[in-house]
Image 1 (cartoon, rainbow, N blue to C red):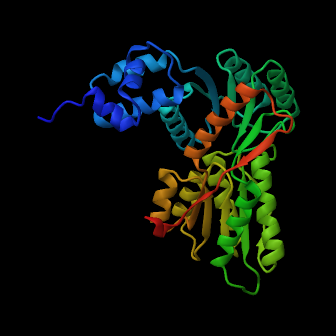
Image 2 (image 1 turned 45 degrees about the vertical axis):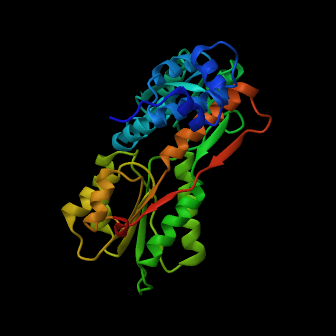
Image 3 (image 1 turned 180 degrees about the vertical axis):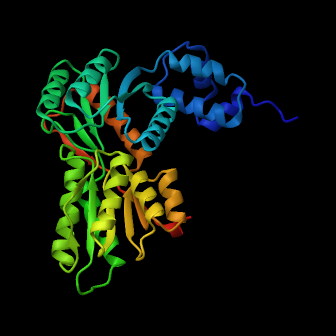
Length: 346
């Protein structure tokens, strides 16, 4: 059995004096928060027997922030993973300590979103929200801002000018990337081949930007490829399934599909059921078990994924800053790098 670490071992591991460790353990004199946390981390590393006591001492002096996260229920696999990642990151936070309150929006209807915001606002100090862009939601976000509760737009922007900040990928570049990757697999032909695009709806600012980037890239770089009229699927698998079957029956020159939001499971199932004679290249958003299997089966060519770990950490950090310093004079955007997955990634 190894020797149990001593207070001297802990002091050496954390780079402070024995007296400082003693002050952290017993709370006799003030110790800077950063130093106390360094001692706690060192205690965890070496297995110091009084680590629970250290944690208890430090917990009493580190502020606790209560943050809310409201996500959609229409994309269950992706958003449940998002919640898991965010909750784990909140539990790991030491300075400040975080309490995360999570909830699903019942729908993307403005009244439902406003009701969920008001309910969440009574429990938390700041809110991260995935939402459509709508004037009534902007009014509610402004009301919450004036009440001292900043709201951050997550993944898709809304309430520009009144929300605290946007956190997510640059959706214009996401659309361009999807177009570029589809085009690489589609040689020029006569008559021209066709590509299709699914979006959740026209109130989703992020989907609107992805559509713009997608269409503009083809217009500038591959005018020989015809982009069909945009398909609205409300981020649901059922509508996407039926719309994909209709596209396959009406467009024999269809060669590529980009699903810019949810509903990707319906697209994948339709391609599996119909088994088109010529290969259709598919780019989907968000890495899930469904898209992983589809890449392994050769149904999906590439996945563009939002970095949920970085997104959660950015939300926590920016919310803490907003609560500490107050609303910024110029609200901003935090663009995070998109993650690309190919079948060869596995």
